Image 1 (cartoon, rainbow, N blue to C red):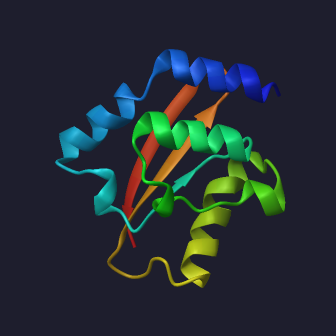
Image 2: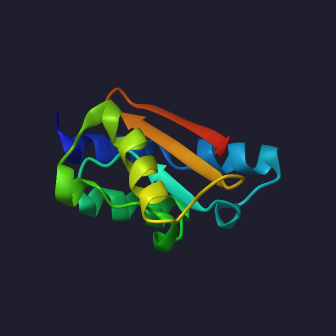
Length: 111
């Protein structure tokens, strides 16, 4: 896994897919209680948030304590946010998956 190349690939791809998805739903990042995003590294997470316009306060940091957990990172972040009282029944959460290749997807979930 080359986190630097993944970051560069995302930056080349841009955040248009995410922003178009939000626009199609008539939503903005601020509509979510939390935004869970696959985290390769803390600096990459921060670059992602800046480029995609995600307020840092909505992110659920996990890579610092648990490392890159691949597909487990999103459910772990959701559990961390639930346990911390950052989200609960009725709240909207965004789950953003990024992977080498590059693939990018987002699920919007109401708890």
